[in-house]
Image (cartoon, rainbow over all chains, first blue to last red; front, side, top):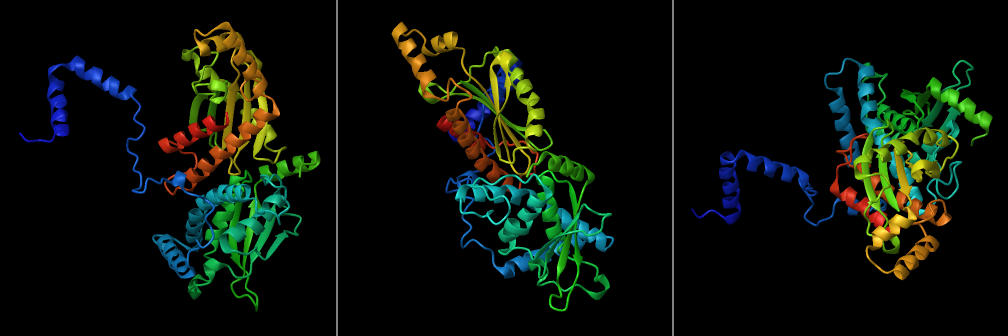
Length: 253
Length: 183
């Protein structure tokens, strides 16, 4: 038969296998011993894997606002399928944002170390290789400044601590006009919904990634001037507050 | 010098590990630990036992590179740590060669003069013999930063979830390359 040589050799091994079981077993062990590093790896046609690309190419690499709005609208629609209520929907949006937060954290630090243009400089961690946030305030400044700039190209509008003595673990980050809500009009019967729950999920991912267990939720607080003003309520867990006290006593900044 | 490098996820799952030897000063890049090859798990024991110290140091030192944090004298194992902001731990165990046996095995049947020359060169020059010198710290820092770059690229992949084992052969090649370059 005029089969190509590669195939014929394969057929030969297949045919030989049932005749001698020992030989077959030997072949199997040999195969498992030899490392096969490239098996199952698909490399793009230009031979550039993700490891060969730069992570700092952010100039002129912004996605257009229209495509973002479309994509985010689709994400909300997707999350809205088979949900039982507004809280459920917000939870789903939150879960979509969470892994993004974990990734952004690494990216943010990577970019600020390698470019040495001070992306983190306006936060309280201003030394040249940026520090991991150890205290709550440092973390919140990181979110309020560098993270917000990475996402929306501007800082958030306010950062507040809860004044109530019952809830010392609550902090609020305010955005007067969140980008995610710009092109979303919420129906009247769902007026409690705030799609910035997605951004809340991102914040939650960042907090958790840094080792600050937290729950973050987005709330509408419209004013005359800013109808879509959103407050992100960050509630840190008890373990974080305990550690915070210890660190404060030890004078860790 | 022999190295054992491992990455642990924030929940202490090992997601990557590799053993390699020095490529500086005529090294061939093959790990020669003091344990026999059948006892390589000792490296894992030692490296994982330093996690407690990492977790203590983590909340005192805000840097990503925590420098040399732990020593296990019976095996002359030195451990350096690097923490990513998202909580992954990079741990590097380095073990300087046992001078008498290490150099002779590396050189095979060369003359006495040759072996003594290489010993002095290794001890004076660098990374290889003195695990706590500033040069070593710097080399390890560079190595860690380079691995961090590859790690971020892995983490940014939409198919990668935090805590998954890193299986990419390209990642392994990158780490090996960084080891060759700096250690």
